[in-house]
Image (tube, rainbow, N blue to C red; front, side):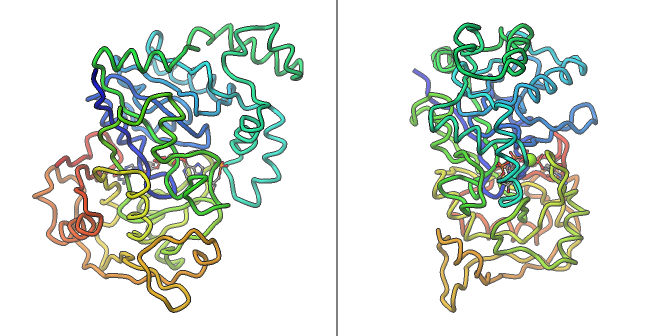
Length: 400
Ligand code: GDP
Ligand code: IMO
Ligand code: MG
């Protein structure tokens, strides 16, 4: 039995460029599966020179033969999914017989958007009702995709008539995509198909390991793949952890390496750092190796992908945090306490900048300063950088 599957997980606060990398990597896989989160995700793929933000559909969808799965761990907003599928159809993307939604995935309900309003301001959420939907799942009041296949059962669940109608309409148009995806994934494994698991959000937003309470309500970390798709741990042999060459964060919460305003504005404009889901300006900071090393540890990352290195082109100097000073004490451990995270003084190593990485196709051809920066990351992390992204197009990619 084959068990050699791959996961791509964001190591920061999301938006690491997962969409672009999944779209690139999908070529070498047969199936791409989302395992957690919902339409809070915004994964950007450039397709035929057009920028497309995918929120629920896996980023492998633009490859005509690839199978795309929304696993049970994802919470689904049917209106958003309908919108996305319609947009894909308008682009002549045919996903019949190669797109599946887990019967066990939970559905976001209208009442979740009402509850979301209270949380949205406190946490700075995406407003996509993610937290309330997961809360109902956990207190066992959720509605699942398989429920909408049975009208009588659905009516017995005490939901509003309008919402029932929406669900029944969804079933008429898209019900044939709803499947037992656990059986499908295990069947693909038996058939020696290669599966790529697509993380949403990132380690620092993980409900258990992120900067709680300023986190999302799911596990983007490796455990989320198992509970979010129904595969055992030994199916995954390769975990690609992706980090930007710097850091960004949207929404509230601690951000130890956040830059000063002027520097943030420069990076935001160069990197087009505006939320793919909400359009909010992203907060920008230097790369944080304390956080990255913690993220690698939690996820079992076996290799690194570094994205947006081109955004650091033409900078005089580049900083990188190697340690934290908290209440006068030095540490290279990422603390669980929010009050400590709010009071971190990062210890920076300063690197000389480089002129240009954009357009380069081989690691060896990178400017020596960029190589030095990457080597330092590799040495600190103890794992190799196998992919470097130097632009938003599929072809802007340096392999190892
Ligand atoms: P995701 O949520 O991890 O998929 O990331 P997002 O799509 O939310 O944000 C990444 C943004 O950076 C998108 O606008 C991408 O088009 C863009 N992007 C991805 N990789 C690169 C890169 O290597 N260089 C540049 N300049 N832009 C990139
Ligand atoms: P992708 O998959 C960046 C952030 C929100 C907020 C917190 C909680 O594109 O990387 P939520 O709506 O999940 O309850 O919000 O998490 N957040 C993201 N930030 N990228 C994402 O997804 C995010 N999904 C949620 O900004 O701080
Ligand atoms: Mg995003």
